[in-house]
Amino acid sequence: MNNKRPGADALASKGWIAAHRWLLARRLCQLALMALFLLGPLAAVWIVKGNLAYSLTLDTLPLTDPYVLLQSLLAGNWPERLALIGVVIVVAFYFLVGGRVYCAWVCPINPLTDLASWLRRRLGIKGSAHVARSSRYWILAMTLLLAALTGSIAWELVNPVSMLHRGLIFGLGAAWMVVLAVFLFDLFVMSRGWCGHLCPVGAFYSLLAKGSPLRVTASKRAACNDCMDCFEVCPEPQVIRPALKGAGKGVGPVILASNCTNCGRCIDVCSKDVFTFGLRFDNPPENGTQNTPHAANSSHRSTR
Image (cartoon, rainbow, N blue to C red; front, side, top):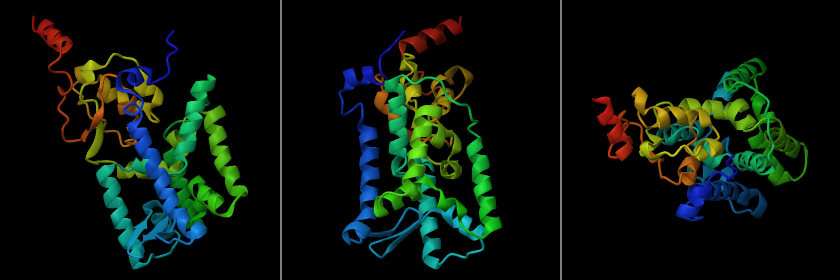
């Protein structure tokens, strides 16, 4: 039985920084964004006003969460012009880089669920409840229906992202109970349960990722040694297999699934540098299988 921790081979071959570079970049991004939001209310330095639902940077750049705006519209509230400009900017950005980049690079709950996943592996917690990944889309639909029926953005009353923001500003309270519940659920009840199966925010942003040009690609998939480290660390491991193992089925190496978060962890932990960031258009089925002895021998045998 292989008891090595995921990424151990990458750590040995690439060094600590290279084996964590995308993880470190994400944490810096998340911390920087949270610091910008907190500087105003905590230190009266108003670089950014607002929160992740709606913000105004330097009193000039509006950014609006399209999920919140959609709920507002269904509740019967027409947004102001700046909010509409902000939603166009945000939708355009996430369409280009992948909608669930929000989950891996922006969402402040992500470090907590990542910590819960890491602790599960370290503590050897086995077993997990089963909830279909499609459940998040049903919850998304229910939040939109609830907004239409109640005339309010009801989801924001319990949204862990909003709760965490309030908790950081106002201190201890019910907000922290919601955040703690998400952490304990992922730690003890279901691995990656919140982000991967239940969160309607991630479900909504995955819809923005359909057609996004920036994707993770298994461009050197022929070099894969089946260590399975990428599957261990990926928050959505079901998206990897078609691209990584699809050469014989005519499937290209680009991960096209909209639930890929573009977190880069598969790139970090792969000692063979199978994965990299690329474009969805560079996706020929033979890509990643050529120019290797194994692929060449297989091709030669198949022509006999």
